[in-house]
Length: 472
Image (cartoon, rainbow, N blue to C red):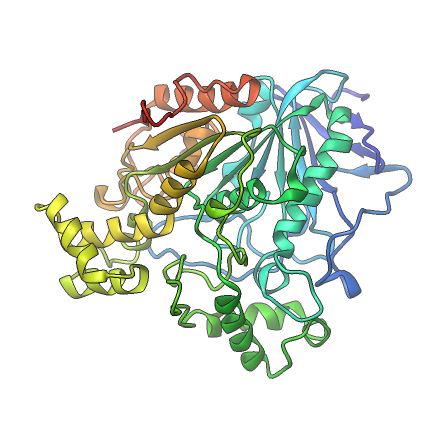
């Protein structure tokens, strides 16, 4: 490295110029694979050919093609980032490090959420300055989304977005030493779709040896589509675009048309004789696997930290005005879409929460279907060391109704909860100040786990089902 404001790192693909601030150094838009353009658009990622000279790593990269997502009155721009920033070379990583030296620091690799259709490393919530401040090298990953990333097509490998993350992990193995990181001490962590991708990594033989620990924030071990469900989405996409369901045919269609076709996929009925829709209609894309990650052989050599928020489903109801207006019929409809025996599921929930409103019951059913049940099943299947948490801090956004909804834990993990852009009536954390001690404790737990495998509480065992509660 050199200079005071613009250090230079020297990873194997080529030199990269970054920026330096009081938290450490930041290197942006580093390709971990060749641009997914032309014949590579629906192909397995291949290594980047490299470059001569010093590459500019001071600005964010383009992002994967993606639609705009609207969450009603809630401002989720810090979560979704800038949306689609056009350009082919978006299979990139950003790196935050104390220094690009020969240090052997713990490495954390973050996989963003966004329903498998949106998101990027450019989201403000993923600024990793607190991790660099605390001695961790943070890598954030862009991957293919939507149709290029997850649509099943003849002539293309399945789960291309997951293959991208695997390619990024191989890049970390080979290059992170140039940024002061220890390739032997890597923790993968993801939230929402990123956590479900992390579950896929746990079950993927190709991922063995690429990371030592994993963190799943509000993901699922049962969030994958079956091949039959995926083919229904493929048929709908081909019909909407007027083409054949092959990689060769889709390669002729510009990304803008693929993005524009997304609304036509939102109503696909994924209920089959053997499976319900694991995403409850919220996204037409997920991993596509014959066996759920929770039911696949899971090696005990990877430590896991896993948890959910206590009111996950509120995100999908409160901002859109659906929470207060929920009816008993709405509750049953969610159960019908997500449970094999919907009447029994509703009856059991009412018995356990006799004073709950229809909105609260609807939220609980959504949260359990999307994240809770799949996380519990993964925990039960685990043979390795597993730490479990629950996030209960209630955001005061949207007249105090948002609560401990999906995504609310992220500012605390990244120790950004005091940022003004997360506050206000429509900000993710609401108008009230966030408890600083909670951010300090939660961020420290993530750093501790990545450093030594110890987040500060005992691992879960059948005899001692410990759960660490944050907030509440």
